[in-house]
Structure formats: structure tokens, C-alpha cells
Image (cartoon, rainbow, N blue to C red; front, side, top):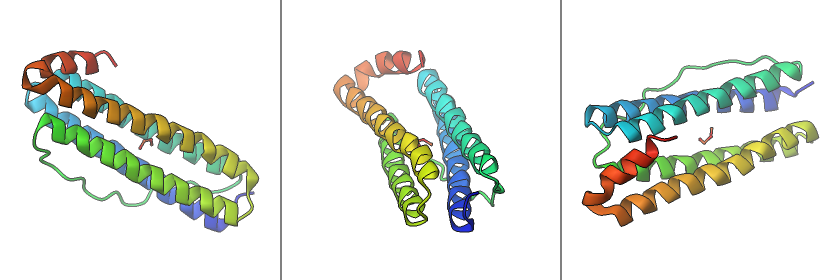
Length: 159
Ligand code: OFO
């Protein structure tokens, strides 16, 4: 059985994952309006992935005899600036989520819940990948310059 403290901490993360999902969806709409279909597609996929994380965490809480809960999801920002700025913000956001997951591991560790620590380590590793992917896109955009953006966008559309 999962402790109340840990249950609350994971439920907070479920809300954070859903916020992330909305954030990426908003970015997707923003890019779509500008005709950047590849980026819009990539961001919509990312939004789906964040929602899956929320569902996966909820399933875990329930499996451990707890209660999964969605709290109020704050409104996400709008208006992201340039193509590069959108993906700079994706990278920054993923770094922020990595910090949240690290803190969650600390809670599981303080609660001496080994199974939950093990479950969360999967997310710690996944965040390494997500940060690296976002950093890679930021770098490609930088190297591409304005003329190469169509190439980057085509690549992102293949996700
Ligand atoms: Fe939920 O994985 Fe990144 O943010």
C-alpha cells in the first residue's frame, strides 16, 4: 500500500504531467497557425506522451491500493516568439520536469518505498532522454539558421 504522502506527491505530478500536455498542445497550435506543420506535429505527439505519463502514474497509484486524482490544471502560457524560442522553452520545461521527478524520488526514498523508487527511476531515465532530444532540436535549429528551418520542420514532422 502506498503512503498518503507519496500518493499526494504522485497525484501532484499527475497534475503537472497534464499541465505539460496542455503546454505542448498550446505550443502545437501556435506553430500550426504559423504553418510549421512539422513542429506542430512533434509538439502534439509530445502532448500525447505527457498525458500517457499521467495515465501511467495514475495506474501505478491505483495498483498500490491508493487513489489517483486530477487537481485543477492551471492555464498554460501563450505566445512563444520565434521557432527557436518555442524549442528553447521545450528544453527549459523538460529540465524543470526532471527536477520535479528528482524531488519525487526523494519523497519515495524518505517514505522508504522501494517499489515506488523503482517505478520513478524509469522516469528519471526518461527525462535524460527527453532533455537530450529537446537540446538536440535546439542545436539543429541554431545550425540550420532561417534558410534551414524548412528542413528541420520536415524532420520534426517524421516523429
Ligand atoms: Fe512527462 O515527460 Fe517529459 O516532461
